[in-house]
Amino acid sequence: MCTLLTIFFCGGWFAPLAFLQMPIWLGLKISIFAFWFVWMRATYPRFRYDQLMQLGWKSFLPVSVGLVVVVASLLIVFDGLPNDIISL
Image (cartoon, rainbow, N blue to C red):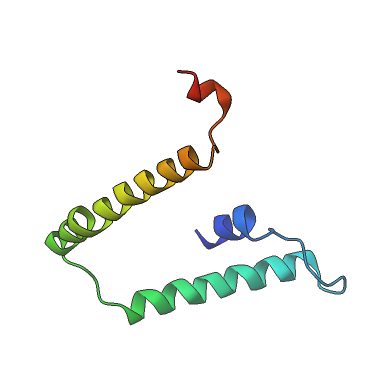
């Protein structure tokens, strides 16, 4: 997971400084993400299944639907939609 995260989203093996070797830089990024995952897993408690379901249905779903409505209305008000969609 850490390797995929590093390669896909964090520049992979490309180093910002020329003197760092590519495998060393990739290993450093992977190690940082592995440490972060372990740290988060150890710091926060696990949710029970019923708590996860309640969090998803009562918190995340209404917020997501609200954001979809807000973004859609902002696109319509500020004429951000492509012309093909408006003519439908």
